[in-house]
Image (cartoon, rainbow, N blue to C red; front, top):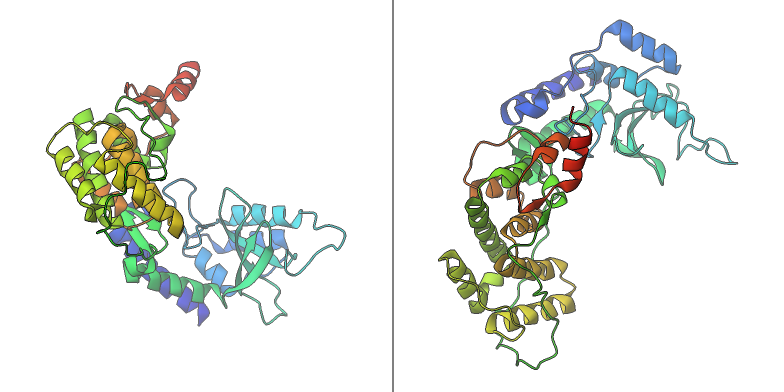
Length: 381
């Protein structure tokens, strides 16, 4: 019965990915065969739970890479050779004077999904004599193995299929043919926007007004945005500047900053192409932003503080940095930040995911990609 649940769940997962995230779907490997599974069991000296066997007979793991299908834990399903390697590595960990501990790692555990950048991952109990045989848990570097994720892999995959079908309500986001798992945005507190402006001599946090539109953007600000970062790097300056204005407007709406008439007026003027006001600490706009900083600090609202900092950056700083940092902050506020950014950039075709060669070959005077350029020159192939 559980193997049937695995097959039914994979049918739902495959169909959903094929329709909504075809690039992610393409990373699912073909099935393993029975001989490969038998060889892996012999190598590990365990009997794999029927659910894991059924899953491997559907997909022998997932290919590595940035487009890989990942579970809601961020883990990538491993193929048989990777399962053997990852489990063997875990068995070789010195657990100290006390020896093997059930809450850390036992020889009867098998790791079948991995976070890749650490040894964290999903684990199943292969001790056939235990009631927990086939249970799914997770191993963390610092705390060891904890079961309770699901009673079986079939149950886990069924819940995963449910999440995909619930869509954004379950933190499921797709963009450019790829699947992303996102946490639910936190609820934003409400603030009054009718307070009078503070006096110029009132003690308030100061704004960073050392910014300049000509400031170089370090390429690290773009890398985290993947293909959107590459798009920003190659679009004309005017398109990037327009996107920066649109992103800042979205951020102001989402954080309530546009409720202040000084901010609203500044954004309206900026969108009309007017020159920004002189960067002083005592202009009406600056006093309003400084008062919001004080309010945010008093409330411990880091998002609101960051929104003010992005507002200052957008009005007086580099459009390249502004569009990147507004998008980064919006990723904490809305699940649609990628699609919004793409729309604000004009919805052009997206380039491939950038690699070191892309950044090394980039020639944009507004972006500092000198480290990659040096590497590219030293190793052109």
